[in-house]
Length: 195
Image (cartoon, rainbow, N blue to C red; front, side, top):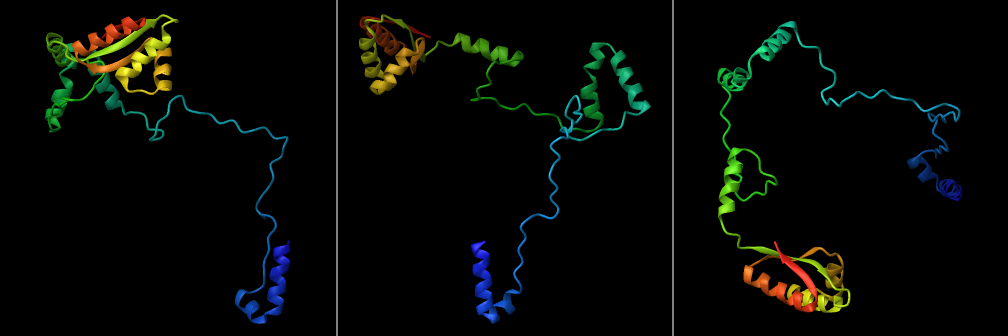
């Protein structure tokens, strides 16, 4: 309110300013705002069973239904040939295999993946992880000191790591280095294993 009074006094003392700006208009409420009746219940909307981003579609024609029934009646051997035959007839380009070299695919599936897994099993493992299984409560401080020695962690980080037993202490180390770490942990009063 003080601002409005100030604006009116400025416009009253300077008539030229009033001609430039015009009369001041103030709206204290929105004329199209209608408050909601507190007694009314909220609207309930019917949601579809599944989300379809393209909206409702018309039902398939009789011809399409007949083709689908004929395909469903085929034996599985012939059904498996439909995709390649349609691709050839519609002149779709052949799909090229994608190289997955260097990618972590998680659980590998398929015959090619199974063959690759067999080849990996034949190779000797060169990188190992050292995992702390358990430790004596009395030797906790010694174990923390040993963990700090080969992980370059601070005291708090090493303590938190040791308290989260079982946990991986070091990853990707050679077999000799892993055996050395395991021996040091064992001497300090803990039990570590190589994975």
